Image (cartoon, rainbow, N blue to C red; front, side):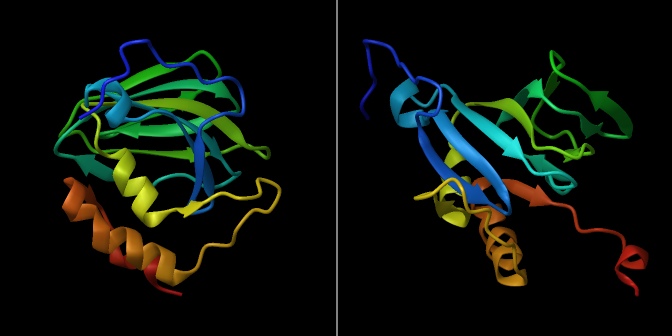
Length: 165
């Protein structure tokens, strides 16, 4: 394991970026750089996109909203998160978020300890060009669902009645 004893510096726009189910994840610090203590990801969430309800079994997760309006669910509570809002979700808590605005929202997301960033790298697509927003297809969703348990992530499917046409 390599720990950067000199610190980490990521200027705006720097860091490895991946498209993850339609959103842009830019890694500002990963476990290999922090002694596995934490990972920090900047996420640009597209309008009407976000995460499904899910539960982490390995890590706590914290969020700091930088731009936009996100609807968060923490267990049964629904919260409108605007710029400056900070939320913490301990491991074992059901949570999700959705960009309810008409423009991309931006947030910082911390995982402690690190490790979940590897899930996003596995299911995402390394960004070579930030100008092209990729489409999300059923195979992308299946890939995420198949990989989730390997990382201690439980994704909660929508109720059956919401799937009926």
